[in-house]
Image (cartoon, rainbow, N blue to C red):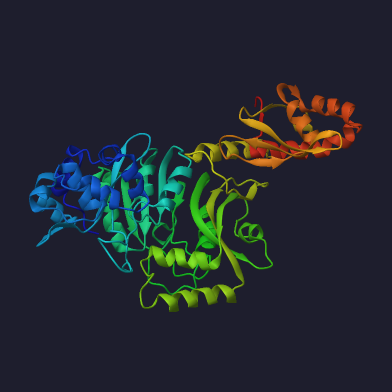
Length: 495
């Protein structure tokens, strides 16, 4: 793989910084309306804001973010032309200077970077994308970065690195980073991304499919936004399709990732999985998990087959092309043949705990959650670890505290004796914002958890007021407390 010329990289980096070509700088230039529209993929408002503005920042925005040619003089003032051309970022033609690649500011709560990728479908690059197309910043990549546990790591792996977005985020807390991809073009653009951000000494980029380039190596943390699209296979779009039919790529990563983790190491990935008629999706994905591995499958949405096919054909720029109908029909018929009723999308967290009693969580969580998501995920992992190995006797001896944001919500309707409660639920107002139905005993149980009173004492009080014996209440109360601790409704006090 060719290393970007350091002098050209330094010149372009200095020009981008001098123009304040950052997330904050672009937002301030465009204003909230045009900036929000651009983030939705609509460029008209931003084109209007920057029209007639030949300043350096406006020129870079029109060039790289809006896909518009800019006058030669404006481009020369904003970019070192020879250096930018040498790196393959721009090309000068009769209509002015055009972008050949997307160079986009990206940031976290510490600082910012520049990400280099291919131009997306649109005015700057109409029609279907090329087989070796390299995606830039998108909803999936941001979602994975948002959910990744930022654990100190000696060495982390970005599996299917693409243009290197996850590697950038890993650089905040990993000493060394390895990025793999089977697309040589992706590795070239990732190398340019790393160079522009001064990270190339810490990032090793390797060509190959999935884990093949790192055979025998182990990592503290693995992250992956793989080509997870569920399809019949056979597509040559490397960013979208793994070459494996169905959800086999997700299964392979789940089965293989733990063998590349150090003891206690964590892997997090995005995935699609099939909902097959007559089979619970939870059972399908749970069967992928190797022994001794903690696993959490968090389904965030489900699409019906037709909506799913349309989404990905639009994404690749195939909508409206001559082959669109035939591709759509073949894909949909394959789903019918496989009895696929829907396609789930979500997060997978794996940990090589080596425990004889690994925890396994498979759940659907479609409500809005806090961002970033990682703190809430990390807190639940800690609670699941706390529960492991604790029997009912240990729970009864422990005190629990109600989560600060927990609320009891009740619905009532007028009956013969006035207002009658017909439904009540516990609802967290932060983190994962879970909601679960409860009854009067459950509500009283939660109310009795003051952080000081052992659960056994709470059970005794409930027995005295419910007409049941403490013995009768122990098993259901302990089961309910386990679920409420797992969900974050109750927090264990002390060790």
